[in-house]
Length: 411
Image 1 (tube, rainbow, N blue to C red):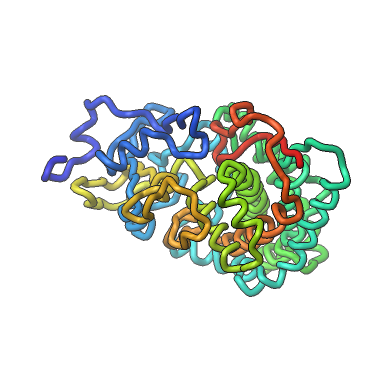
Image 2 (cartoon, one colour; image 1 turned 60 degrees about the vertical axis):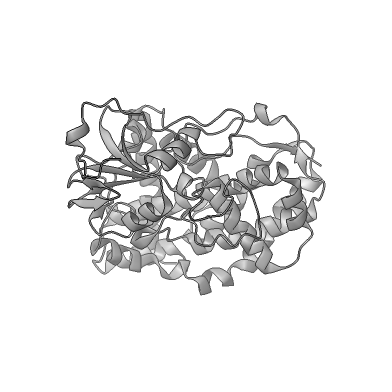
């Protein structure tokens, strides 16, 4: 590495690696090997993305945390150099959200919806989440086997919970899932992704209209109240509702399924989790699986709004930046023996929920959901096992959130 800072423009003629990189076929739970090599040899480097543009790729834990907390890095996806993950991702712009705005507007929007996701409020939901989990397990045990764990359990549990929190009818869940899949898959044509986003937006907007006329005790009613008070436009309120709905079930559903697969591949850790009633160990298992799997793959997309010198490089104002939390969570400088799954590790400092002002608002809810699921499913179905070979499982390599499309299991 040169001692003098380099800029993107100075290295434009160099042949750049393409991002994203493929995972190793035999190691679908691990980040791409090329990311590991870059973390070791070129932790801040330039890559070329799908549309031919370039971006800085950041792979080390300390560098990534520093940039996620740096106000000179923007999440504004309206910036002309924002590094979208594909045409479908580019089609997702339908109003302001806490994900795509910077402070002070980001802080204002976040405060509007933060109360329902507070640790105290979410902990009060634990009995409701437990009842949902137990009910789905009862249905599984009473039905035929093998069963697709996604359809029978991993998708319905977080969907039921987020529908309850938002005030959305669960009976419409097939519509949400279909629309979310179209808008969250990289290879979907932009026109289809945009249509799916618009349909979801109109659906949430209709519910918002009902809450404007007749408020209830739910998050949509809180958003409707902010529209009435003039704090939020109706369009932005519907966009925030849609973002929470999709984000509230998709990432958790993938973590439930992928976490189960990872534990089935590590029977010693599964046995340790199945046999404990210690809430601290269950909570530790959640953090370790979040670190180990990091379903928010493909990096965190940002744009520099001022020059930043870091790691011997100058990221110039206007440069695109991709922060790869999936490999940062496997950085040996931050986690000893990072390739090993150890549910007692104490991995709470992971960056699966990002870091800084844009860390995931819904992380308290996700943590409680996963604690209830991981603390219940394997205890109630102790002989749970795969009903197919791992190489037959369809992984979401093309998804904005990583996971599996199906997970056949039996017991």
